[in-house]
Image (cartoon, rainbow, N blue to C red; front, side, top):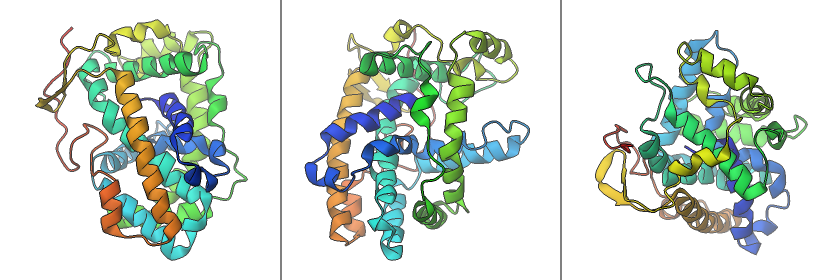
Length: 326
């Protein structure tokens, strides 16, 4: 998946693609870019409690369910729950599921196979010397910061882009998430977990990503043999190092789980495809929300049931068979 900053930038750019009637329902759109973290909120939740590895593993397991299973069903259950409780009238509740959660999933589904292919791995594996996937995600994040916002990742306090006021009433959102996560994935109190993560991600970005002195990168590299994956944390990198992972030369690459699916698209082409296709999904979904009639067949006709891990149909094992041989 792309990293937190790329998703945040995607959310902001999506606004210019949405229909005026959609945007009229979202007067506070800019205020909720943090919703772009989607199912990754589960990964950020209590990330600092390294002494509670069992709970952290549970968070990762739950996140995997949301990434790879029942995407359509969850969206439908969420909107159905929101309609029944009246939460569908709440701007935050709709912003979370549409421009936030759904678009996070779609951007992942479009670009994640590419990132897995070029990094050569997906999840952290103690057998590998380092977690290249995480490093590639970081490189893409700092590239997007430079390209889209002209921000230097080694100097800009990136955590400031992820602040969320605790004074904002998220009770309707929490209730809707609790009910829909339980019904779809049998995850209890998922709404509370997401809600707590809203304020925790700024600490995640400040303590792990922001690294103006490069001291953190040195420490994380030293810790990597023991705590696999720490070398991927720091944003203190040269943004130009991402060049080999963008495929601007448009060479053929393979879906990492299915060699029969190939493409020559670059990362940025995939990104813009997700932006264009996703904006249409959100416009269509918003029309349904405004009508007040939540019909399963209509929801399923708008939202593709694809895994955010490999871009294929939900429910398939994501075993890496193909990767770039440098």
